[in-house]
Length: 238
Image (cartoon, rainbow, N blue to C red; front, side):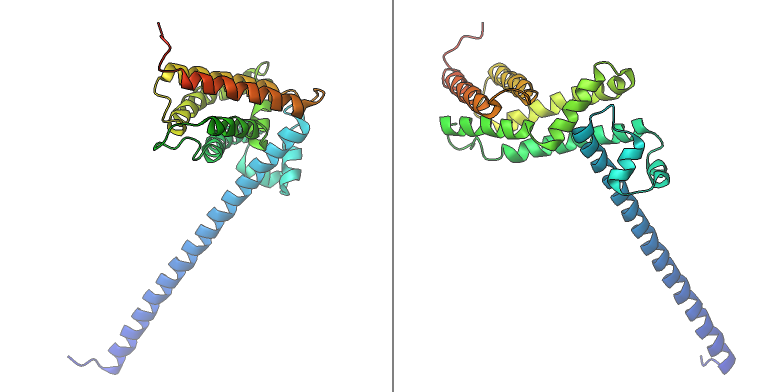
């Protein structure tokens, strides 16, 4: 059926109106997407600034004003994303939780090849990687929070369940990294020894000849771990 001129005009206007609405929706979606991306970038900048403050200034001196200053955002923008200092710290704790697991997995990648026996040189490499791990900014910032949580009740209540979850996930990662350690009790003991030693060494920043002493401890630790790994099938757990 042929349309007259008036009908054609009305149809054209209707099509144009629909196209305009579609274009407006696209613009709105793009703006919304950019705003969401910008918001995420700002949150990330604030959390990274908080980590920087924790490392350089300590927990007690990490104020919202300083975090905003380090992040290069206004105090208003800071409060828009995080209504309180504790809200920022809580987000930072969650961020460090994921980051530290990822960093450990990356450092320990290919240490223990599932297709061949774990060698002494690979165990030595794992000890060196563990030392590198506890000297990373993420670990140092998290240790600052752990130390502060000893006397800060609010921080303790936020950190305690996260730490428990981290310990569980961390050991699961260790089991994946070292598939040749078949007896989990020995692997768990080896893991605890490495962690306690490394955490203690990481706090020895004022010790004289720290690096040389750390290397000496790491050599002894690697030798012990290799002996434990080599004798694991000969030891009676009972």
